[in-house]
Image (cartoon, rainbow, N blue to C red; front, top):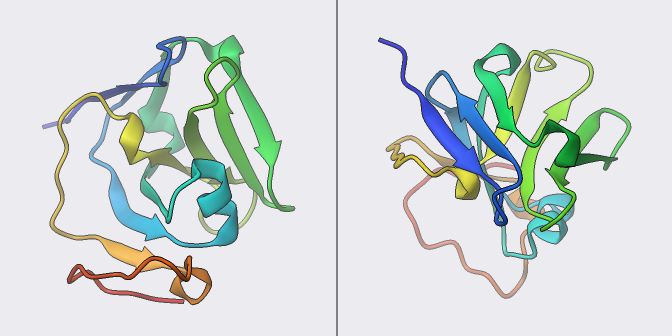
Amino acid sequence: MIEYFQGSCLCGAVKYEIRSRPKALSHCHCSHCRKGHGAAFASYGSVLRNDLHLVQGADDIKSYSSSASVLRQFCAHCGSSLFWSRSQGEYSDWISIALGTLDTPFTSEKQKHIQVISKAPWYEIRDPWPQSG
């Protein structure tokens, strides 16, 4: 059974649908994710690129290359961080969805904190999820 999840940006200009359950749920503490979200960390789930379908607002998405192989995408109107992906390498067929933009209820028991070596010094991780990097 295929699960469908809908999501959108803050202003509603961009709407998307994902046609699989997000995997590899992570809370990234790297400086790029912290700055891109304006928060202690960014929460993402990944799907195969072919499972992401833009329903509305494809022309309203702007892109920013935060490194040589990472592309971050956001709404040009409200600035909502929507997706990030790698342009090359092992995971180039996947795209990561900013979980805060999902409109469909979603839960997952399997999550992890990544890039914790560069976490914000004012934030203390207190949940039971594994940590790496």
